[in-house]
Length: 139
Ligand code: DQA
Image (tube, rainbow, N blue to C red; front, side):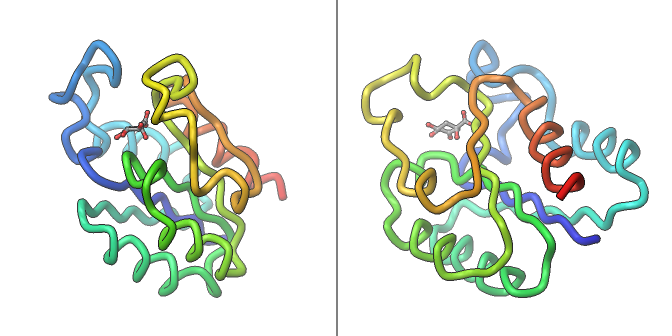
């Protein structure tokens, strides 16, 4: 089983960025523990700050992988193209946000992805990725 985690802009700064909101752990460190927990699953990771690269990656793996966990960062709230890519591919996408986007600024309440994803998890910190994984593995 192949599952990909795709992180969008500024998520490469986890552990350094607004730690009161996003916590102190770099994503790579979290990923190691996740990979150990799901040792029988092929887990790949892609991060980009560039919108088109995220679309390219979704298209590249979206007819082959068994599941995608996508945190598109700020593009969630702005990108018709990423929303269209999620709708276009066959692989189920779980949308994840570390912070509770509904408890923050109004512009974070809208997502171009939620209506195309199989489900969304927000506000549960990095644990959200694990919960998304658990769902995809159980399918
Ligand atoms: C985020 C929430 C977005 O609103 C924000 O732009 C991010 C991170 C989250 O994981 O909480 O970059 O997707």
